[in-house]
Image 1 (tube, rainbow, N blue to C red):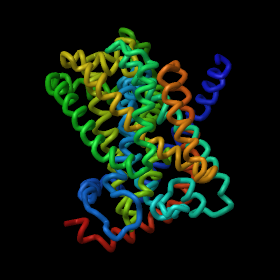
Image 2 (tube, helix red, strand yellow; image 1 turned 90 degrees about the horizontal axis):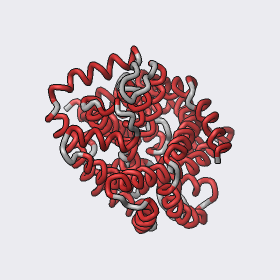
Image 3 (cartoon, rainbow, N blue to C red; image 1 turned 60 degrees about the vertical axis):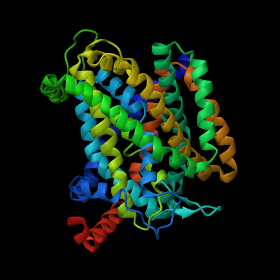
Length: 449
């Protein structure tokens, strides 16, 4: 086990080195500039589109539920444990780099969804399927089929990290700490609940996500905003610390060991991607199933996911951790978030204890669909049932595994999954820009009204 962990650490250092930071931020910045900052300028138009139904479009689920399925996979432990880990290792400045990753990540997420809908296809059962493996195959041609296969392989394996074992492990950790629940019990219960939903496929997952995601997000934000309101006088200094630490690093203080600027940048980008998944290529798998005839319209809805996940939800968690001073405690992961909420509001730790299991539950639902589609691409429809069984069994393993190794593995697989997807987005960018310009010109009056 130690040899495996050392191997993963070495691989992690390579895939999350300077090349990856440049690739992720560079892709987002390139797409933002190529789109003339459209994702930021048309943010409110995206919200207006969210509740409009496209009755003539093909697809399996409503555009709103496609976004909720995507958000079910992103609003999870990354918003609670991921933010805490980034600040615990990179200092308050890591939150600033998470924001930057999200702002350019909106363009990335938009581009992913545009390609997913534009290049999607029907499977043997008549269901709309898509994602990076399909827009690589159908957009770049057979000479790039190996890249599509690589993405599907990394996506299938990565789903067991970011979307399964990490979620189960974080839930087991917080329930054990706050309620004394044995991790094995958590694993069994979580496996049963997830199994009951995923057996119904994307429509049942989207239906559950469409109801549960808005409820849990609003509830979590409400408690977080109460904590911020009670400590409103500390917000300006917390923001100043976040911005200054991003460019000067953070000195050692209390239980915090100190962090240089590059450490803050590295953890901010890594945990930002872990949280909002912009660039990973996971979300377009969900958006490909949306009932729509407009790739651009679904892209504008998709980009809202990054904004909601990081700019709103992660910011609340990060600000609570920084302004309460909990980041200097030496704690990390969900324990740090729990401590921060408890410091800001008596009993506030229970929002983490209750919220994290719900967040993780929906994340496992969303990622089960992502992994399933990747496995289907690699092995065909017959592999779906064995995948679902293995998925449920992995939940139990995640609940009882060692947290540090699970996080390390998930972090590494994230990067490996992103590389084929980002290469494809670069190569397909002319198509993305053309589809966007055509849509904006033909709908100019509606957009500006």
